Image (tube, rainbow, N blue to C red):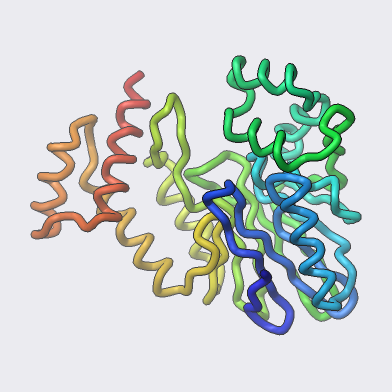
Amino acid sequence: MLNKLSNSIYYLPNQDERERPTLGVICGDNYSLVIDAGNSVKHAREFIAEVEDLNVPPIKYLVITHAHWDHFLGMNEFDATIIVNTLTNQLIKDWVNLSFDDVSLQSYVEENKMSSLCMEVIKNEIPKRESFKLKNTDISFEKSLTIDLGNKICLIDRVRSTHTDDSTIVFVPNEKVLFLGDSAYGTTKNKLFHYDQDMLLPMMEDIKKYDAKDYLLGHESICDLEEMNVYWDELILANQATQSKSIESALERFKINNKREPNENELFFIKAFVNNQILKSQ
């Protein structure tokens, strides 16, 4: 069920057990804009049905926040102009010519082009897979784009990120609402979950410049400004403590710097930064 953030902004919360990210809709006087397309045909159709029940202006635009499959595989279901940044456009093109029959899906998994989880979602939630073809996007932008939905401005910007190189955010200035997608998260490489330490402060600089009071994230749904600031602070303290591949050294440095043990979140971030040091050494 859609959650109401304001009279013009609604979101469908993430469902991590089904690998479903948060989907959002922003409604102006004339048109509506959707953030992310869902991880499958079924996910997208359920979301569209919920939006139709709101009796809001028609969906004219769909913004894909980045080219991870769980955010764009439902995009065929939207009768809308699909907006992406230029790098996201290039990455999604790699999916346009894929086939989705069982044999092809298995081959993509074996070639590390697709995760086994993605394959299972496709099998379960995309009907008529043998004839399914992902369509192309419509508009690609380099740095930023402004959309007026009718007395509702949406700023669509590409930001630096610890998650991907192609992260896009959507900001609604008069509501002070920022849709972050997955831009504030880490990512997995060589089976190691990590945060890119070199990109951490640039990412925070890009995101903090928006005068937001509510933040919609891909896999936590909604956070307020206080919660986001706690998140940033914990990341910074963990980052400052981690300067090598040694978890023991990082923990000791954290205790010296902060005169306490790390909390659960900080410990998670320290481990991720240690993994980043390991990846950098490979």
